[in-house]
Length: 343
Image 1 (cartoon, one colour):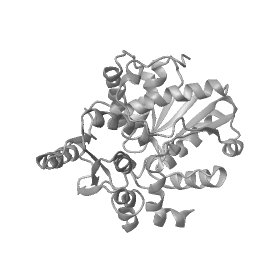
Image 2 (cartoon, helix red, strand yellow):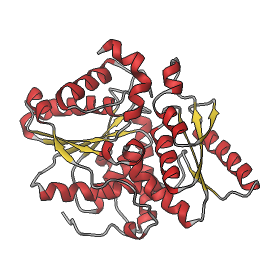
Image 3 (cartoon, one colour):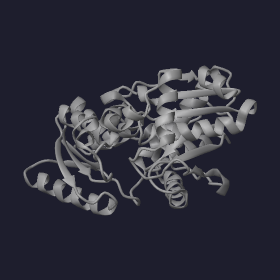
Image 4 (cartoon, one colour):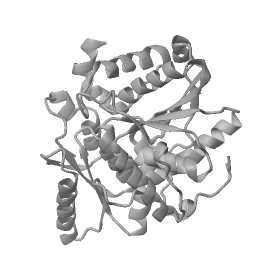
């Protein structure tokens, strides 16, 4: 492992370093004991600091670096009603003295009032963001077009806007945060004399999944990465991750090859769909809370932890596994009325 190696142009790219990094690497001894597993670990990226933390902090350091380099005085972002990305963008903007406009997409059917007003939505308001809505939750390109229209309206009254895009086809700037995280993980493992056999991470937008996979391969590590699908099925997700991985070569200036076997996906915990809870997620929330004091959210980390438990059962005493805790803590409160009766 080339722990001191640079990853192409990564360290020369614009970045606003606000995250509380490196985040801890902790043992999950009680879960490991329950599953009779060799060694289970968690990367605590729920502890990245800004706006209650999460994986979006690493990602937005690079977006806000670009926004600052372009002289922007406001940032616009689009995402689901309970988007962690939106909430963290609003927190970054507040911290840096920028105006922020967030567009909330109606992606999750049949939700109650808590989902629409609590959790991340409440924090969007607390951080001072201007909020608008977009009715079509599965139209990423349409959501981006609407955001660009809003940006033009702001520019007509004198603002200089930076847009955090959503749809595929844009440079995977967000993934850079997890290219860097891969380096951080390898250094921590070497320092603690830990040999990892597999990393398990949520695979939604694909930025975190592609970034950590790219960072490992760029540093010569062949640790397998398994993405747990939280937004779309594995057959649809694989191309998304692949394209983001390869597009990272343009940003880093490297030429990292992607092996067909590198993209491993598990969509068994996705149903009934994005943002909708299932029994596996509730049980994962219960286990994480009761055994390790971990707060897992129904949309991302609970489903991913369910997949992590499955992999740990399969591995038994043979492998050491790492779960990337990508945060999402505020969303727990938006699901209280759905989760609490099932605990």
